[in-house]
Amino acid sequence: MILENGRIIAIESQGIWVETIQRSTCGSCQAQKGCGHSLLARFGSSASRLWVLLDGRNSSNYCVGDEVKIGVPEDVIARGALFIYLTPLLTMLAATTIAHQQAASDGVSVFWALGGLMLGAVIVRWHAYQTRLDSRLQPVLVDDRQPLRILVVPLVE
Image (cartoon, rainbow, N blue to C red; front, top):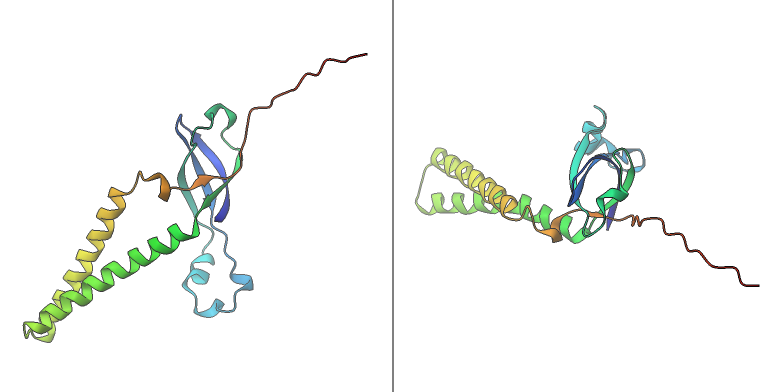
């Protein structure tokens, strides 16, 4: 599970809004000069706002401004990245192959490739909309706050 610290910015009955600051680890990475993330990190940290499901926890245990730890399973990130990057690429290649099979000129093939790329982007967007409420794909609250319970034990002489 990939963990990230964040700050609560809003509280709802079913979930909380958490703001995370994406910190770069570019100082320890060997590929600093060839990495796009390194270039973006130079312009400052960017904040992300995430809705985190409380999953049965009581929302009164949390206050705006509290620090919380959230997590996202690695397999969700890996499968999501593969889907997001490969779908437009594969639809672009399929459209280019169709144009080539139709003996289209290079200019027409370029338009088919762009059309396939756009179709892939639409498919990714549609899939994201369809799975936006899937609890398996949502970030989870890692720190387990429970209301403070005081155990009173009578003194026996």
